[in-house]
Length: 161
Image (cartoon, helix red, strand yellow):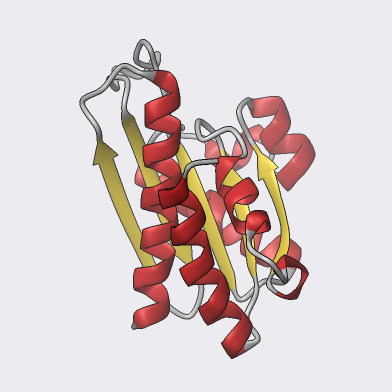
């Protein structure tokens, strides 16, 4: 795991632990890296309640309990969809914060017309924040790492409010 991901997670972990707050994650094209980064910080059991890689509709239904009807009219790599994932993860796990990511890691774009390197990130909790990131890269692993770092930094920003 690269140092920027570990450092971003450590910063978030320290704040969550000091406040006795918790987080749950629903991620897609980051493939579990957000959860892995959060779990790499010592004492993760104090703040990390769980995570799900919701890479497919079947995973979304099975892991988050969100049926097809809940996403009618939404496309997966969008801020409204990411908001639904973050809120659902927070509610399902009883966490202070929900953090979600959904996008196209690459090397090609997704069926919705988004280029590789596109992702939408949302934090849902005492405050809600959303961010759409376009890396402009087709490198799958580089995008997954960039998505993870951006998600953790978005959570850090929410914690600072």
